Image (cartoon, rainbow, N blue to C red; front, top):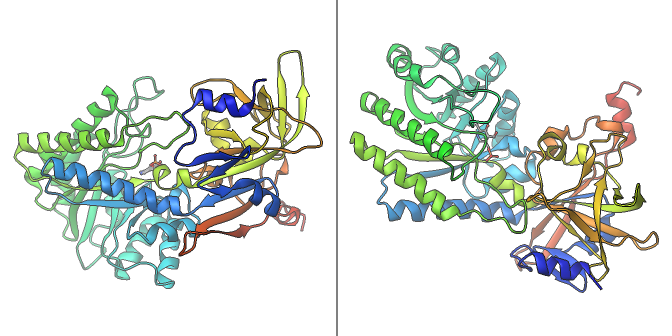
Length: 463
Ligand SMILES: Cc1ncc(COP(=O)(O)O)c(C=O)c1O
């Protein structure tokens, strides 16, 4: 008999750091998922808060060790990119590790004010402000600066943006410039719309930044949306960026930092392999070599990891509510929610996540397609990260089967429009937070119940 449990052990090195199976049921970071399902029902979103601190510590350790190895003189600073999950419980958990924040809109600045009111941030924190900025955002940046957040750094997306701050403050403001990177060769555009053209940066500095009394150029920003990957494309873009940093450093003494954005990946399959140590060392080695060429000091490094900070803290569990054989080959397992609304990256960018059955591991398995509850034909999930087929234990109507998607903590709620009106009026699922108490016992608490019909009716103007 081909049992699901055997399939998992044949295909993967199992158990893993995060997953184990006990009596045919799955545990995620030792959380007994079936117990949670019995207590809270499905669909159920879960955030495992301790993972956030672990990730921050991991990045700090990686950079500290790499810097030591290459006698690197600069400092490393961890910033969290709030747009990957704005929730208070995420940002507050991350802030416990003395990190700083990167913002992307005027409303992000309200988060900082709220944290300040709660006494959770110090005014000397770094706030890195990215994004194309309209007046509300630039005004908000000036407002926070004038309230005493003197380490708020607008990172100019374009040269015009400088006018919003020029001569608007009595004290000197730190300024960053984002460099427009070239996109991956197979992309639809050649150069990113985000940032300033590299060929214009030196003159822009000389003609504008250096001549503006309240400006001090602090950092250059570099981010490519395909992430930090060991590809010729990534290293080519990164080293071009470093050459420009060094050129500018030779004429701009205040410039002392590079911001290398986000882009550390997360595990999207059990077999995921990424050599974080090697990649961090390569980053540092490249900086050391290029700074030596130009005879300039090593810069400080800021990162703005989003997915890496929160992605692996998240999971979502669905019940399989039906099984439909639509022809002799294709078997559909229907879930009690929607992929399009709860994990929109699956639909929008073919994102894959770790998917595992929560129970019935002793049963035989089927090759399946998973279908969401909306009427949309795109509301499906049918392959693993490496393109392999999906397998789940047999479904029996009177014996509920549950399936979990893991490492779903970044971007899904904001891209899906959490709390708003979603496709076919599918409600946002219940969301619980899982934490450890002082004795490392698992504690759970409800963050939000399932979205109510009433709230949707209000948004739609019926109430
Ligand atoms: C400017 C900037 N920094 C950081 C990030 C975070 O990227 P990631 O979630 O890949 O770490 C993003 C994501 O879009 C970004 O645009």
